[in-house]
Amino acid sequence: MIVLQINSHYNQGGAARIVACIHRQLLSAGQESYVAYGRRKGTGKNSLQEQNIYCFDKPWEVYFSALSSRALGLNGWSNRQATKRLIGYIERIQPDVIHLHALHGYYVNFSMLFDYINKKKIPCVWTFHDCHAFTGNCGYYFQCDGWKTGCGKCPDIHTYPASQFFDFTRYMWERKKELFTEGEKKIIVTPSEWLTSETKKSYFGKYPCVTIRNGIDVRGTFFPRDKEACRHKHGYGKKEKLILGIAVGYGDPRKGAKYIIQMAKELEGEARVILIGWEKKNDFALEGTTNIVTLPSTGDTETLAEYYSLADVFVLPSLAENYATVTLESMACGTPVVGFDAGGIPEQLAEGRGIAVRAGDQEAFTGAVRQALSSEGRLLRGQSLADIIKRENSTEKMTGEYIKLYDKLLKTESSF
Image (cartoon, rainbow, N blue to C red; front, side, top):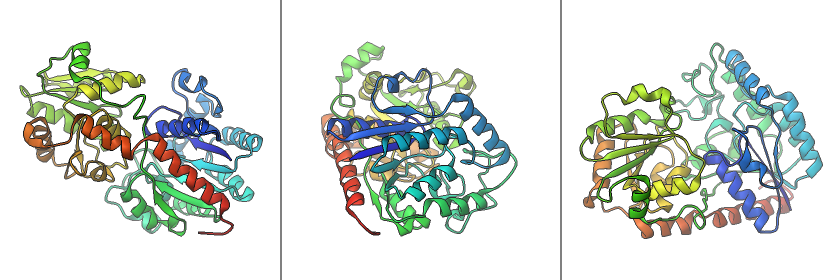
């Protein structure tokens, strides 16, 4: 069986790490696996060292697509030359199954890719990491129900993927519905029961929609380290109360970084807050705080695992979320999580793995963090928490379930 995955990135960010995990696990299981992706950060050294990985976009093409999308309001209608290269790659490897992931990101032409897939009748598994596939444009629709009836007059037109002037969300919704729902041999996958339920309400409801939990490397990468040793290595005291957060995308209101900063102010003298992925340009937001430690982004998963392990609690105040990989990584390292009850987060934090409070409720968020820092929190920690993630969210378990789907898709002669 030949499997080709398509995504915006490879091994850079949550969904991209899932792609990498599936690819590596397929190869280790003796399957013929390939990945085609559109956007490479830096030198792309992570992908260049691996086999059967192909970056089909050039940086200038991505930048041009982003600019034209923002100016014209059409996302997914550029990148013609890059998509020609992608189709040429598909022609060369002749996959039995195409496994789609995140298609937005200014790197592929929807019409060209799906005209090809639909004409060739290539079986597809499509993993939704957000809601973009069934909305007119947005990745998360918050309180808007326009995606159920056809979009238009978008209230979030200036959020990613942003349009500065024009609203073509109704046109894009109608065109995406036409392109994405042609043919029968498709299975839709989401990592959370929440998104599976929402997907069934969309135009993808004609297809099987199933939940496969995201998997992470719980054996070689994300597992509990010695807390005291990690604290000593990175310069923290063994009795300090430490809160860890990810600050990547501070400028995106969906990420909720402002709730972490306000929480830090309210916990002044009680705890220190470590923010990984901080950009110096955002230092103005730290005015009035003395207990926040900022660190730049790192692709070193060993270092990330050490920080997860040394923290007392990890915080994820996203206002919209699917099934966060960083949450799994923290819990796999034995550290519970406090977050908002957005999307699939409550599913992740159930049964003592963390605390989910009402989205946007600063008082409840800070209170939950304070509770998690105390012995009264009664949350799972250490190896007992890590064992649950090891059992439910390993890459082996996730990939095994995907292989079953691939086989089912190939063996089915008609619609499900």
